[in-house]
Amino acid sequence: MLSLPKILLVLAVIAVVALLSKSFRGRAGRDDENAEDAETGQKNQALDLSQCAVCDNFVAPDSRGCERANCPLAN
Image 1: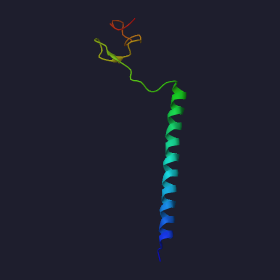
Image 2: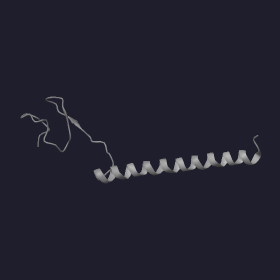
Image 3: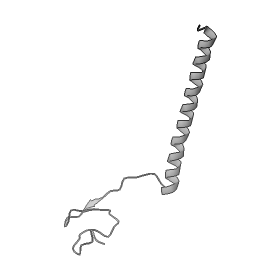
Image 4: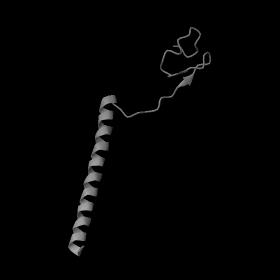
């Protein structure tokens, strides 16, 4: 037979398991972010690319261009 103490005990166990689960998931997410930041030295950032008028390839603004002799983006 279910009594009030048994019901309260089951609810307490469920609450503790839920809190521990949430705590462990939160720690795992932070560890992944910190490991990624330490590996790359920074967070992922968008890179602005410029399209070459000659061959329509996209290249970074600080690169040498698209490897063609007549590339307008070559330095």
